[in-house]
Amino acid sequence: MTIEPPHSSQRDEIIPGLTREQCHAARLARDARFDGRFFTGVLSTGIYCRPVCPARAPHEHNVRYFRFAAAAEQHGLRPCLRCRPELAPAQSGDLPPLVAQVLARIERGELAEHSLGSLATQAGITERTLRRQFEQHLGASPKQVEQTRRLLLAKRLLTETRLPITDVAFAAGFASIRRFNDAWLQAYGMTPGALRKQEGGAPQETPQSSLQLHLLYRPPFDVQAMLAFYRLRAIPGLERVDEHGYERRHRVGEQEGLIRIEPVEGERLRLTVRDLPPGALPDILYRVRRMWDLDADMGRIGEHLGQDPLLAGIQGRWPGVRLPGGWDEYEVMLRAIVGQQVSVKGAITIMGRLVARTQAQFGTAQLPTPTQLCELDLDGIGMPGSRIRTLQGLASALASGALTLATASDEQLLALPGIGPWTVAYWRLRCGLDTDAFPASDLVLQKALGGGTKLPVKEVETRSAPWQPWRAYAASWLWHAMSEQPALLTDPTRENPDNEPKETTP
Image 1 (tube, rainbow, N blue to C red):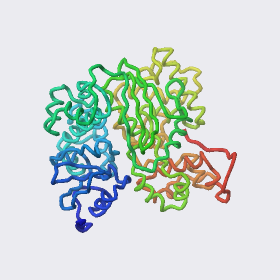
Image 2: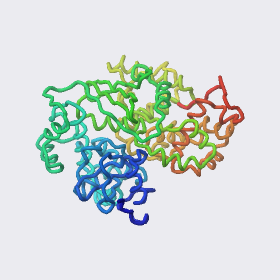
Image 3: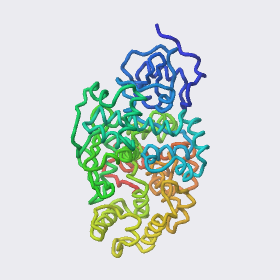
């Protein structure tokens, strides 16, 4: 007999848009659309699960719902070994911007090198205020969030890889194997080796040059649209997109390795990391998840944007189009500046020249660091002098420490010569920093909303206002439609437009 849930007005945690009744229904249906949006704490067993857990559903009176895994662990619960909460897509939407910013830095593993106080100071708030806001919005302290991140990553590595336990500890962000063992034993009541043996993992005594992890997402997800986007914008000498996936070179200190992402069955991507130190893994995971927009709640976003007939038509034809992000804030800013008023092909050609000149001048095949860019010979690279000065101005501000892209305000960016509203909005959109970022002056968007005719910026802003707070996704959908079948927007009477000139944004 199923226990009826309490009235929908009751809430256990701050779960935006979800009542207890909806959580109850989602877990009974094992609905993948809700995976990661909440966790089910089973008070009678002391474990917490994903809504898709295949185990027998517990009675509702034994259940408490948590928005974040860290909140469940702070409540004294441990992760289910069957559904593995560490695999759930993450979600950090609806958080205050400063909280989201600090949370992202924690997820990247930055607390291994910086104190919480320094992260708070850089975010412009006190440590006390930060702690209070984490408790209020996440249901857990920053320390618990970081500890949960480390433990869940370690759990994945113990289960899915053959890394030595010492490498697992450092990859997860623990300063020593002793601290790792102590934290693990306290949280899960067993040793790391016991869990690996229990899960059928094979011990490994020698370091590995490569590892693989599977990254889950909530459907729908148009992976082929994402690959097509990256294929068109792959930087020569740095990135490559083939029929099966995406790969790029990545440098950590003096080590250079390869990162590859491939779609596989089961609503997941396979991440392969080669020849890079284990300690770089949290940052790599964060970059990949953001770049591929793996944590987006497309059901919720689609429900809101689908109220607009124009966007509903795009959604119906291409469900699951997401925000194609960039590898990091700096690379995206270089792309945005180089891409000002030029074609995608032209911008990528110049980006490839930046890589080639960096290799020729400094011996490393990568985009120049800010310090290198200040010294790099840019004569004859194919950009006007004004844009070269913009690149060098950005590089100088970053190299001197006067500007930090992770915390930069719009005002700081707009104060740089050659950087205007389009560049800032496009940069924020491609970095995944703002789901409402919308470059209203973008020519492709102006034509898409004007039926082929350039719509004035003010009218674009008015037209897009009802799409808040998801205008960045609306922009991505419109760009995709203008790239694939522009006549659907510019001439809706044509059902099957062929050989149409396609509009793209850098």
